[in-house]
Amino acid sequence: MDIIIILIVICAAFIIGIIASMVGIGGSSLIVPILIFGLNLPPRTAVGTALVTVCFMGISSTARYYKGGLIDLKLVTPMVIGSLAGAQIGVMVNEVIPEDLIMRLFGLIMLVMVPVMLLKGDDKNNLGGFNPSLNISLIFSFVLLSIGFAAGFASGLLGIGGGLIMVPLLTLSGISMHMSVASSLFVMIFSGISGVGGHLSLGNVDLFVGLIMALGVTIGAQVGSNIALKLDPYYLKIIFGIVMVIIGLRMLMV
Image (cartoon, rainbow, N blue to C red; front, side, top):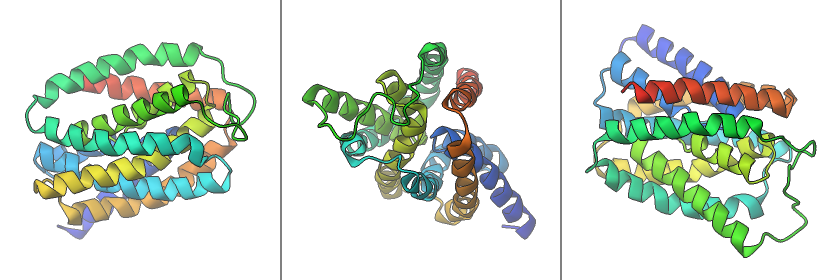
């Protein structure tokens, strides 16, 4: 690969890392088109390769959010467990169901969720409706497990980090926007690793390209997470809504 192309890819990944880490998404919904149309990777390889960058982006941004006190293990553990199972099933479904059909449905769901999420107020408390000093109920644990499974499934199926599923559902469950973003990024580390493993076994990963993009998103994620921590939850939610609309419309036009 030409050095100029490599630098352009790193710069693009850097910008994506900023945006993705601010709103709690993996960024692969933005990366996959670059891999397909810019680097001519086959769609399935682009999906698997994008998940490599998701893992690095998640680790980089989660480290910053953890320092900010926004990662709580009681909250994220059920989602991690659900995402690991969902990612593997998503990879298998990716091999048998037309991807364009799933993407259109997913895009429609995203557009419907935007106004619902924006109309829900955000608690002024940094933790939203979640009190870390209390035990999570069995019912809420199942809700978190289901959210993680849905996110993992979307990750393995479409090569996305799952944040476009997790963040809206967490905010609707009473978690603040900042904590939803941080929790989403933590979970996608594990769903991303699980998805990468599945795609590697199928030969759907270009590690060289993935690691080049990982360099850019890792640096960008540090910048984006620092910006997000300084933003009011309302404006962070607006930014997330705009990103959801853009990606949702793009998916409907596949």
